[in-house]
Length: 114
Image (cartoon, rainbow, N blue to C red; front, side, top):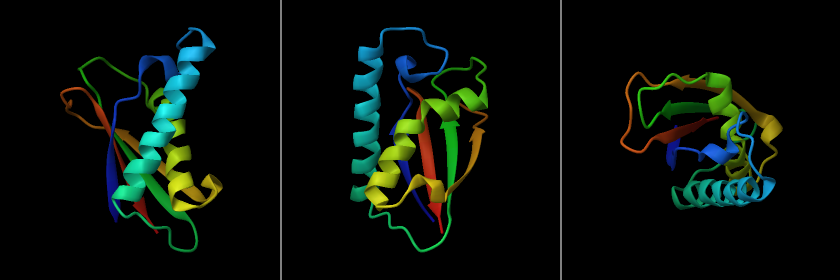
């Protein structure tokens, strides 16, 4: 099992954010590139068959968050991971949880298992 750590998704990519499309597009592109770079630099590889991707969210503060919102905010991370692994993300099976404690600025841990 291998993992990467990525920054907490910016507010503009969360599904309930109602802002202009341009900042969201820039943030999404950056997130996808960050995930691809982190996966490549950590040496992640994709074995044959389904890939289990486990997301662990470490929020930046103690406010309550809904898990489905956190998952959808990380779509660009999953797309970047698929890019780096050279696979279609339809091979991913997901599990997700919100950690019971916070990280200083928030982060997302993505673990990949074959």
